[in-house]
Amino acid sequence: MRRPFLLLSILIAFFAIILTYYKPDILQILTTYTGTTILTLTTHLTSLTTNPNITTPSHMNTAKTTMSRTLHHAKITPHLSSTRGHSDHGWLNTYHSFSFANWYHPSYTSFGSLRVLNEDRVKPQSGFPTHPHRDFEIFSYILSGELTHRDSMLTKGAEGDNVSPDQFYRMKRGDIQFTTGGTGIAHSEFNEHRRDTVHFLQIWALPWKRGLKPRYHTRHFSEEDKRKGFVTILSPLKGGVDATAEQEAKAEAVVEGTIPIHADFLMGAGIITGGGKFEWIVGGRGNVTEQNKRKVFVHLPMTKGGKASIRLDGRDDAVLKEGDGAFIEGVNKGDKLWVESVGEVEAEVVVLDTA
Image (cartoon, rainbow, N blue to C red; front, top):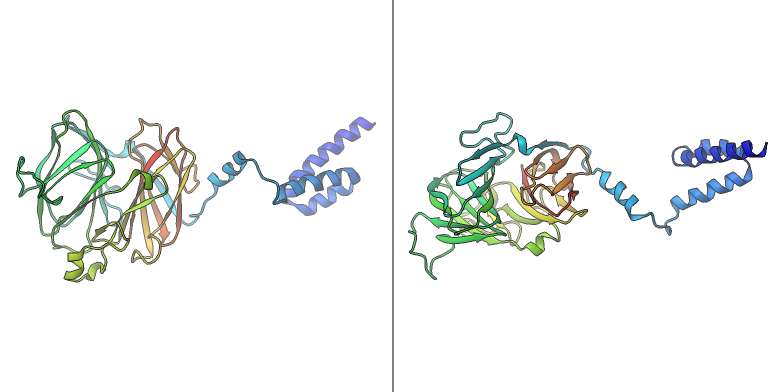
């Protein structure tokens, strides 16, 4: 009779341990019938789960951490790469996250101030000849290769040491070139390299008012900084929509070291190693943006041959593969968005934060 009683006692002890986590009162009832030995065993095992001096194995911590959510109130809708517009013109292979050129989708026309996000690959010795822009904030983020910007007033071959970056600049990985179209501006973007294809994102945002003075900005953002956390690249112009002529001339952004944009808008980028996590503060840290209610678009460029992948806010239904994006709605300034790299390799992530 001892063996059946022993097996029964072990079974009861097992359920008692499970119920410890959920219903301590039930545990007390069960242990009343199993004797002092089992009560002692369950008490000891329970102490292992609550003793702060005992470390839980790291893989168990990871499982809990990656599934935790901080944006319970937010709606996250993936925008899969397969739902983007796509055109291959031979010299240009382009994907459109939002309606552009001959591709139109009623669900993807804009998102807050964000109007265009194209992921482009341009072959060597080809590109966009001189073309105008007006009343848009336009920025090119270089992922690989090089892209040459040339203002319409500068002819090819006239470059020299005294030419400003506004007139001529050969952009490489880590560079971003920003254009305020304003009342009208014209330039060309060409891949003048002999062998290498250039891969870049071209992004357009709507400014807070029309008729601005046209202007260029070009800046480099280091790979090293992007591996430490999200680097803010664009932030609103100081003075906002009512900026004075002096503030426009100084062209200082609210966040030091960033490029100023004429919109309640932030752009960030980061390179997250496999298993790593970065935190994006919606609306920026401190009093950076105006509107409290915000939207965030996250994009994972196609840079790693399909091996990169990220998870947003610990949600299994918000895992993005290369080329995918995600609409995040219902967030407020100060909310924390966690982006986790869950692929085979590191992931380069772009965040666009808009009112």
